[in-house]
Length: 144
Length: 144
DNA sequence: GATTAACAGTTGATTTTGTAACTAACAATG
DNA sequence: CATTGTTAGTTACAAAATCAACTGTTAATC
Image 1 (cartoon, chains in turn red, purple, yellow, green):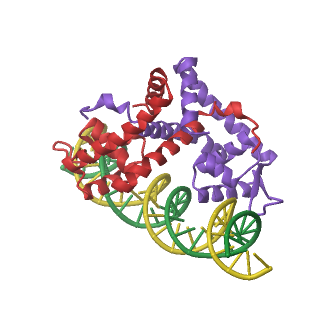
Image 2 (image 1 turned 120 degrees about the vertical axis):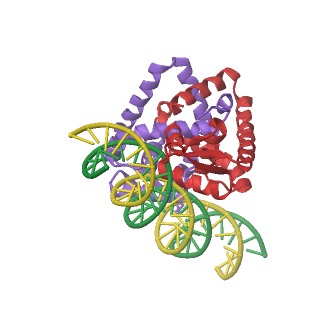
Image 3 (image 1 turned 30 degrees about the horizontal axis):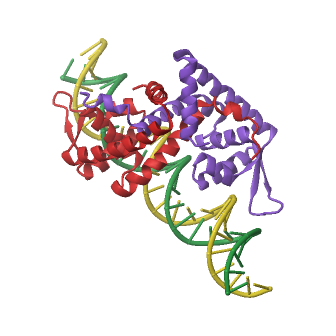
């Protein structure tokens, strides 16, 4: 209850990031979960494919830092819903190229709109410059 | 592989936050897990008590947005390690006031140092102003 | 003051995740 | 071209998360 260290809280970046991510995910989740019944892992995979287009699970793994089994299962669920297709690599048959179906892209577009709404709220509370800095640093931290 | 939407990625704040939080947690985890054998939920509870001092599980729940069962179990583990003590509220016996023991505070102090090292790395890559903006906005997003 | 509702926290059942061991495909070395 | 190693992805099992139902306590209403 009594604040002991308030100032220093600002210095705990891993803590702050977790707090902020959890908070935003919950808010975002309230919308997409009811409407799309999609788990966090699933929309993250969907976003990767939507943003970058056709790619393999390995590539999603490297970019997202998600565990490969998590991706494997999210891909299976998204495939079951006909949101993506898999295609074995012609010259390397270990690889599976993933690509959104039209239905998958539609879901992505809708979720993208939700995410952009969420972003728009930020713009109201902060200056353009501040939001730009936030995005720049987050992008760096996420090592995209 | 082919980028389709690169520009728009910057707009997906919930996505970016998750990426950044996951990445930073993994880096942070490599240090604290081996050294302290502590789970993410546990250090988050520890941080709350370290930062704010004595408080109830309910308050941690509200601030952290973590699920109350997660907190309940993290508290039990931290208590088993003698990192905190519980005390029933005198006038409301439903409440349990949690407080770090000296050992708990020691662990917190050490983890805080790790977190601050992590932060220091950021300072090398970005200007003071940028980092300040990042912290300000994350604090706002986390609704502390 | 008895009864019903609300709240703090825990426990148990189910779901999701992580770890490690596996399959299948390719690459490198002898 | 056989053997050994490596890589992409899956699966089995163990750990941890969520959800719902529970205990014990306080507050509200009759």
